[in-house]
Image (cartoon, rainbow, N blue to C red; front, top):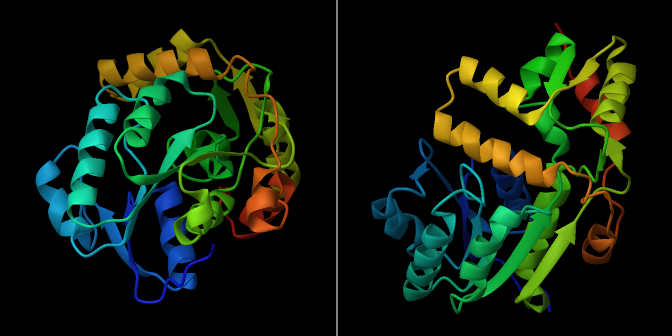
Amino acid sequence: MTENTRNETVLVTGASGKTGRQVAEAAKAAGFRVRAGSRGGEVRFEWHDSSTWDEALRGADAAYLAYTPDIGAPGADEDIAAFARRAQELGVRRLVLLSALGERQAEPTERALRESGAAWTVVRAGWFFQNFSEGLLYDGVRGGEFVFPGGEGQEPFIDTRDIADVVVKALTDSSYAGRTLEITGARLLSFREAMAEISAATGREIRYVPVATKEYGAMLAEFGLPAEEIAFMEEVFEGLLDGHNARTTDVVQQVLGRAPRDFADFAREHAAAGVWKL
C-alpha cells in the first residue's frame, strides 16, 4: 500500500554521497521533508559518532541507511544494530538499508537490521554507473586509462538514480517492509565493455587495464590509503569480482513499472555534460 508522504520526514544518511544525493532528490519529489545527514552537511551525522544520531533521528518518520566506508566493513553490523534500536526508540518507523549485491561481507550487517525489530527493507544493488563519473575511479576514466582488478567478467551495473527511485518506493509503500530487493541494470557489461561505451560517447579512447588485486592494492597505498582499508578492499574485490554477480533481475521493472536506465544513455548524457572532458 502506498502511503501519503506529505509532512513525513526522512533522514538520508550519506546525503552528500553517490546514492544519498539521489535519494534526497527523489524523496523531495515524492513529498517527503528531507533531513540531509552527512559529516559536514546541514544535519551533522557520522556513523562512527553515535552522539550525532539522536538529533538527526528525532522527529523523523523514516531513514535511508547508506553505511560508510562500506556495508561490509568491520563493525558495520554493530553500528547498524545500535542505530536501528535507537531509531525505534525515537519513533522512526521505517528503515531502508543500501547493501551490495553479492558481497558476503555485507551479510552480518543485513542480518543485524533484520533482527533489530524495525520495519526494514534491504536494497542490494550492483556496481554503480556513477563509479565511473565520480569518486575514486573517476580520474582514471577521465585520464584515458582505467586500471582496475575487474578481470573480464561481466557485472549488472546500475544507475544510482534507479537505486534512489527504488529506495523511495520502499519508503512509501509498506508492502516492501521485511523484503530484500536485488536490483540491477537491464544488461551485463564487463569493465572493458563499459570503457568502450564511454569511449564511444566521448569520442576518444579510454583503455581498460586489468590488474591483479594485490597490484591494485599497492597502487592505492601509493595514494596514501590506510593499510587496513586497503586490506579490506582487496578482500572485497577478491570475493566480489569473480563473476558470480553475472546476472540481472527484473526487480526495478517490478517496483517502478519501468525499465532501468541503460549504460549507453548514461555515457552519452555524462559525455555531453563534459564530465570526462580533459
